[in-house]
Amino acid sequence: MFNPGALTLGELSSALKDFGILTVCLTVGWKGRGLIQPGIDLFKKASTFFDRAEIHMTTMEGQMNLLLNNHLKHLKSDEAAPSVSQIENHDASKI
Image (cartoon, rainbow, N blue to C red; front, side):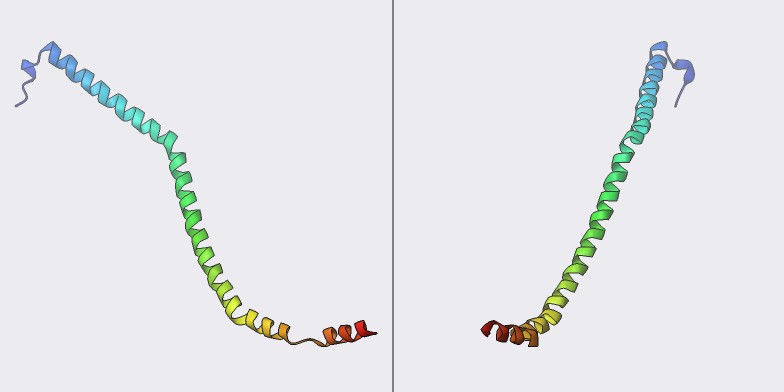
């Protein structure tokens, strides 16, 4: 049991010193959190940005795949056949 009557001055001063060290450590840690918190917030914002960028890139890759597989094949097939203006220009160059 704790007996306050049996405490010596050395034990009392040691307990006060330990309590003071603990209080200083907690205070410095709490105040230091305020210095570190902007860095933590910046990391969270950057992480969120890169998550959104990854989603955007995945969507863009899918849409470009759709474009390349569907629409550009039609354009390539149309490009292979000569158009009327190309035939007219070709005939004009013979003159």
